[in-house]
Image (tube, rainbow, N blue to C red; front, top):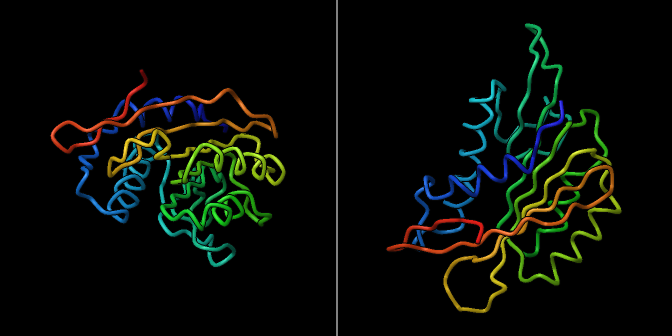
Length: 186
């Protein structure tokens, strides 16, 4: 089942403040909190989420997966693979993890990555288009590209990649109120 990944992004933007992330949190807190958000969302949608899933040792550990249709012995429907990466030098590795050839192919993937700037986003999109074999992929890039010097990313771009074609990006903005981070469309 293909998910409406842009609708999931809309919910992520609208509910970001409920994660209670602040300008004082470190990178690890962002990663764990955002993975937990998507894990809970998968549960609320009726899927079974797993963190650091290896598909019984068949794959490298995946940050989060959603599965459906358990027959008492096996999970038969790989709904979602999500990767969350903070480190700039692991952005290409993250794309490779999302789009690698593997025994179990997810129907949907989401990659959330911190990147240096808009130019790097364009480079990563070019790479993604060339290696993506997934029919429904959402790439979310967080960047500090406005140059305001704040201690947190302030622009978030979401690109839907469907069968090798990119959608027009959605752009959200991050701000803080008394240190708590909020995300919104302007």
